[in-house]
Image 1 (tube, helix red, strand yellow):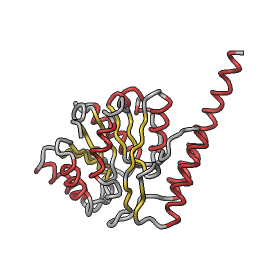
Image 2 (cartoon, rainbow, N blue to C red):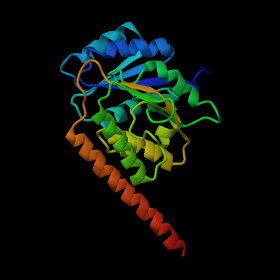
Image 3 (cartoon, rainbow, N blue to C red):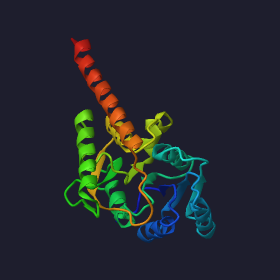
Image 4 (cartoon, rainbow, N blue to C red):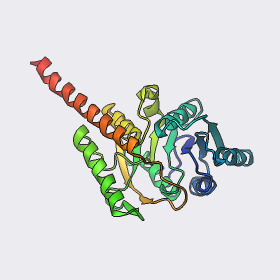
Length: 252
């Protein structure tokens, strides 16, 4: 793998992930030793934040951002991105804490930023050739594939895995998108960011990953999260088609 173009920060949001966080950070550093890791903890009552503080005290590559309440995945990432942009980082990575995103795939994501003309956003994809899902029951796979199809049809986006949460951004993308305006709080945050990036004209590329269902802890998916995604994606899709309809009318 070529060296990343500038410092790398891996942002890992946590809530009740004490069982997983130490192992994930260890695997990140085994795969990309020069990367820093920012743990964004939403006031986990199980002591995740305190364990992260201990890790940071022992390794200067580990940083911790404490938030006082569980305010959603999107809000945690926006806070983490803000801290990344306040520092020297040129590449910012999203990764889950539960082990579903293999840190061993991270070198491939970083390499895709610099190869073949380079990408501005690289998505770790379950649904391109070579990607796969391990240990998911059939109904979860159906739900995930259905959500991606729904988003592609609603938005007209060619991205195969627009809902995935394993991705690497160039710094310029996050600077230009004005992340302070991102209101998505649940998992539709991932759709929102990929959609904004594509609409802004940045280069988006997908690389295959192996997604493995968590072995420890509980999933944060809920009915409220799914309903938010359905509503927001439909709203974005309608607005997008309305804008496309009005452009030819104005020209005429």
